[in-house]
Amino acid sequence: MQNIDKHKDSDQLLDEILSKPPEFVLPFDFAARIAAKAAGKFYWRQYMMEFLVYIGTFTGLVAVILAMNYFWFTDNWHSWKQFFSDNLSIVIGINVIGLFILFADRVLLQYFCYRFSRKKHVSGKLW
Amino acid sequence: MTDGELVQQVLNGNEHAFRFLVANHQRLVLHVVGRIVKQQEDVEDVCQEVFMKVFRKIKNFRGDSKLSTWIATIAYNTGISYVRSKNRKNEKESDDLTNFYSRSDNWQGHHTVEREEAKKILGELIEELPVNYRTVLTLFHLEEFSYKEIEEITGMPEGTVKSYLSRARNLLKEKLDKIIASEKINIFLNYAEY
Image 1 (cartoon, rainbow over the protein chains, first blue to last red):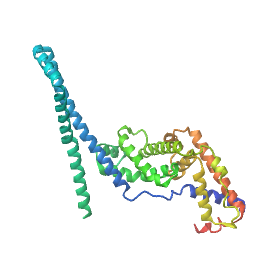
Image 2 (cartoon, rainbow over the protein chains, first blue to last red; image 1 turned 135 degrees about the vertical axis):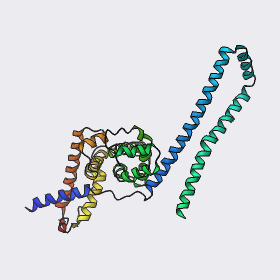
Image 3 (tube, rainbow over the protein chains, first blue to last red; image 1 turned 135 degrees about the horizontal axis):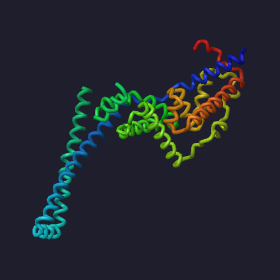
Image 4 (tube, rainbow over the protein chains, first blue to last red; image 1 turned 120 degrees about the vertical axis):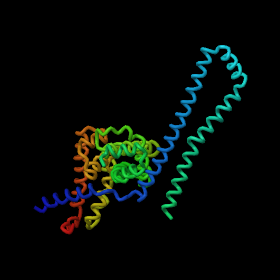
């Protein structure tokens, strides 16, 4: 009888141990920190998408203009081609600067504004 | 709020919804990751990685399973990948029961083994089990997932899950019986109090 009881008790003890959660815990602000990090990533992705939409639209417009020139204004096309090949570095430089300005305006500035407003919001809450 | 509504809110960029999701599932993730990753100092980082993966992949959640099962799957896979990458760098964790069997029975020689001490010893023994056994035990006993859900989370067939569970339980029971048989035991002395 005692053996049967012990057997039952050891099962009970085993169940108790197996359903006992591990001792370590996550910090109390874990969820808030993760959510803030995820929100940062979400906004960054949104701004990047916006930037890519701008780039896509601009590239599309340029492609249409170039195609029109190529098919309908053949004389103009040759002179433009000559101009681009003569001033390749300037054209590339202007494009890179344009891209950077657009990136800074559409992505970096917006993202920093978001971060700044968030910091202000958090510090406002604290005080 | 249903799982689908919560997921939709997260997809819309609602930070509070994601915070709610994390708060609701952090215990589950902590238990799954905590059982797989033994180094406590790394557990928080892995948990963080799990939730960032959840956030990245949430658009792929189609509601075929419960959100908790889907999150547990990510937690399991992330934990396993972490352990594998760690093992590649350091010593390999044995996938068999060598560690478990070779562990010295350090309770022997004690005159009495108190109930709390036996629980501590068994807790340590669980840590010595191979990672698959530990995970299956945690998912079944601690998180109360069904065999089907455990199959979904771990990718192991249901039969394997059942076999791991019964084998792990038997092994632990065997050790516990050894503790009981070893010396003058007090384990069940005050059991009525609990």
